[in-house]
Amino acid sequence: MNAIILAAGRGKRMKAKIPKVLLPLLGRPLIKYVLETARLAGSTKNFVIINKDTGDLIISGLDGEDIEYVYQNEPKGTADAVSKAIDKVNAEEVLILCGDAPLIENETIKSLIYWHRKNNAAATVLSAKVKDPYGYGRIVRNAGGEVEGIVEEKDANREERLIDEINSGTYIFDVASLKEVLDEIKPSPVTHEYYLTDSIKILAKMGKRVQAVRSKNAEEVVGVNSRRDLAMVEKILRIRVFNRLMDEGVLILDSINVHIDYEAKIGEGTVIKPFTYIEGPSVVGKNCEIGPFAYIKNKTIEDNTVLEGNILKK
Image (cartoon, rainbow, N blue to C red; front, top):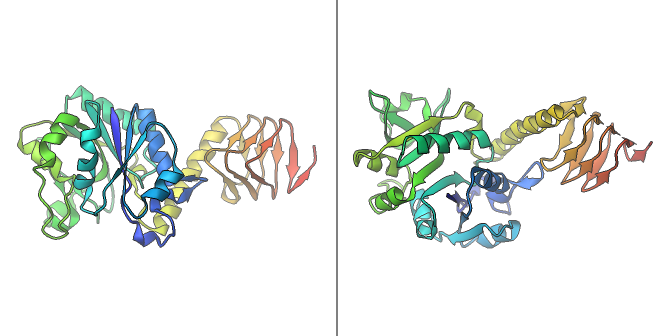
């Protein structure tokens, strides 16, 4: 399996000097979470779609021999972006991921792949049930529950807008089937862009099997399209980091007033007190007491250390 990661969007709403996918999220760029997801899913080659304006910044911000960069110089939509890379894919299956959706969990992707293979599907899309589907593409099913297509918000009729199952923008395709339909996709009469969502309807009309797997947790399919989205995603990810550390035997006394970056490692038996910041790939040993008011950045703290503020007590 290979992966195509969509990262050519300009992200103008972020009002940032760097590409949206490079914005920091708990100490690492957004897109690094997506790359990690692809790798853990079993992708041996990851094609990152970039644009001519911000591509060099993304290339300089990432590393890995399994990454190949592909340019989409004109913003002609997701199907056009995929078409730039599909002939480079050297696998029977391709996973499509959005570079600005960092919360999708490994188990969810594994379930998506498992269901796709079990049903010998041409395409399988990750969907989610949400209370407010406004703005999202809707998963359209027939009376028997089979997926017929995905309709975008602007194209949906009144009945379709009531559908609460949304498209996440994450897919797995049989490569041969995807190649077969990419040339069949027509541009939107409104935006003149080519949408990958149209491939689902085309495949279904051809009689090929199309599946949708619902995420158990709708929050994981959230994409980052604004500063507010970024803040919300960071809040969710912080809770995941704290839960992981506590399951590993770390005591965090005040999770509201503690910041710990994603790549930080903390040993069993360590207590993290309020107003402590641990940034970067820092390593804190076992049975330590850190804080209050401690600041650790890119450092290693030995076992049994007591650190209050910047004062080493033990």
